Length: 169
Ligand SMILES: Cc1cc2nc3c(=O)[nH]c(=O)nc-3n(C[C@H](O)[C@H](O)[C@H](O)COP(=O)(O)O)c2cc1C
Image 1 (tube, protein in one colour):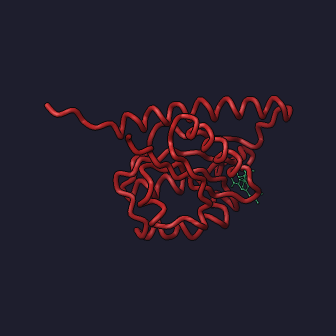
Image 2: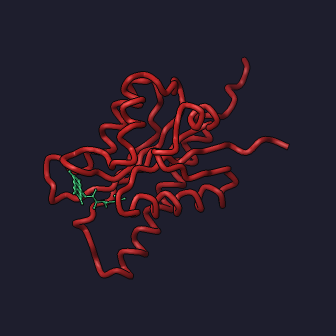
């Protein structure tokens, strides 16, 4: 029997919105047969990354285009080159608020830069949420769930293509 693909969903969050999105993504990936785990960034380290076949980086933005407090130390270690992740596939999810204008969704952008410099491979388009975009709560929930399902399907397909063995000639 083949091993399940292991995906660590690394979460930076202040009030739990990013955590809720990450939990929904984990449920979608699990339904697709992957082994997905939500890991708050203050509990993630090099071993978390080494044990995963792929990552999803899911963070909100805090301060002025910065990352949430629970993500600060991991980001610093990543930027210092202390989190080996060459060739690791990463999907991106960002939560922000467009009313912050120039720093809109700056948190995941900082991570994207740092992961790319460290040699990780971005997979597909980011899934971005704008808190200023609130609809009626029920409509908002349904739309968020639909966007999460669609994004997770695309991420999973890109990951399967990336991890597929290259045929020998
Ligand atoms: C003090 C504070 C500063 C924020 N700064 C930014 C910002 O610079 N850019 C942005 O896009 N969103 C900013 N946000 C909005 C949050 O990222 C957004 O509300 C997000 O959904 C929060 O998710 P969380 O509960 O997972 O942290 C800020 C929110 C707070 C409370």
